[in-house]
Image (cartoon, rainbow, N blue to C red):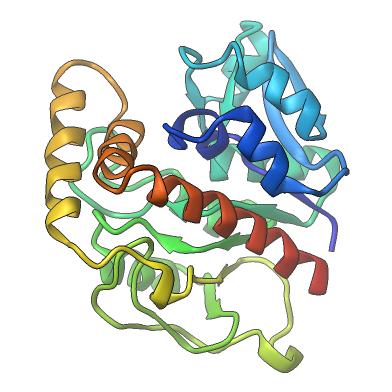
Amino acid sequence: MEYLVESALLTHGLKSVSNETIKKEWQDPGKKITWIDHGEIRIGDIDEFLEFRSRASAYPRIDCDLLEKALVEKQSGALTASGTMAVCVKMGIPVAITCGMGGIGDIKGEELCPDLPALQQIPVVLISAGPKDMLDRKATIDWLISHGVKVIGTERNYCTGYVFCGEKVELQGKAENGTETVKPPMLIINEIPEERRIEDREILREAIAGGKRAEKEGRYFHPAANGKIDDCTDGYSSLIQLRGLIANMKVAETL
């Protein structure tokens, strides 16, 4: 299926990953990444995106609730999962790609992340590696299911975490073997393999603390938390998230 890839992780969430490393890992030559540049929706290839990334560190994250304002006010910014879903609707594209997604948690302005109502209301399928580890993952999945969103895995009917291993959360089925009809409202969770995840959950606790400090300073929680995990793992966490995003693109190509 045709798809667009969100740009918030690539712009703000991969602290130690250089443009050169992203390009080397990416490989795909297509125009599949989307972002906002001076009020224009851009859909570009990896080279076009990396030019944007090189000047975008201070640009905001734009979700579905902020998209129209950003377009009218000629803003520039990186698109979150929900922002990308909103662009997909405008472009007639059926699938959006993210890696770690938002959910329900103790994060300022994201007690209920816009990704969740977007999945319920925007007619676009989202492929993700699952809710981020600092969120209430079970409450997130339960909210989606109770609001009519079909939540399935790629190879198994449960999920256990994002870049850490955590509680096993049951899903509603799996996409393997084409047994599930792929149509919105739907979330497909394609997890980062457990053997590639980070074992030390103390790092997660430090990351949450770092994210909360960022909130108090008026900065975004997720880039700060991601940055702390990156620091504690010498960049490994950022690399597995980049590879997880690319893996989710490959899932879309099989649908």
